[in-house]
Image 1 (cartoon, one colour):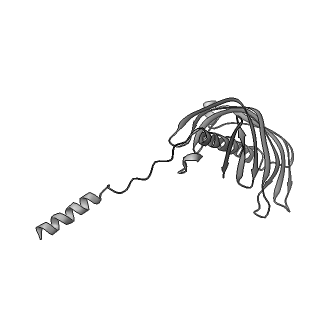
Image 2 (cartoon, helix red, strand yellow; image 1 turned 135 degrees about the vertical axis):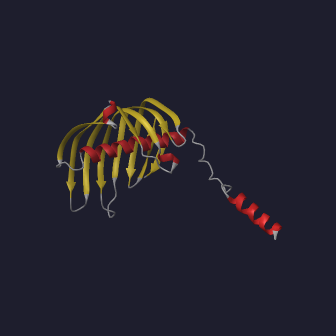
Image 3 (cartoon, one colour; image 1 turned 180 degrees about the vertical axis):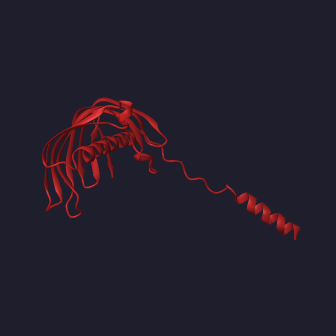
Length: 190
């Protein structure tokens, strides 16, 4: 009986905290980091659009707002251009520019390593095309900038990342974004 109790106690104690540890995230090379950086730029554009433009009347737009957190003097983004809407199609037709000036933004923590970033962006990014809210139609956008300067961290665990005066050319089709950042292929899926 003592042997049985000792064996059960040993099994119980060895089971506490001795489970398999989750595998660490895969290494994130330059291509992976560029993908996260493109994700950061596109996410910052989406945030600025939703905060500045989404609830505004259609037509000419020109809104400047602080980046987050506003109290830290963390830069600004100006969104200007034209946004039209077709309620029957659930689509917006965009010809917008985003002027990011030392704009700091940090993504909420995400369990997916390649959706984490904390960066400062300076760039003038244009966005043209159709943004949809209905599954029956597809978002189709062209995103371009002659000069993107981005620094901070990308990925989880965080990796230092910095690019300066890089060209950006990407397309978004549905939830897929792909193109080039600093003449290197980059892409992701929302």
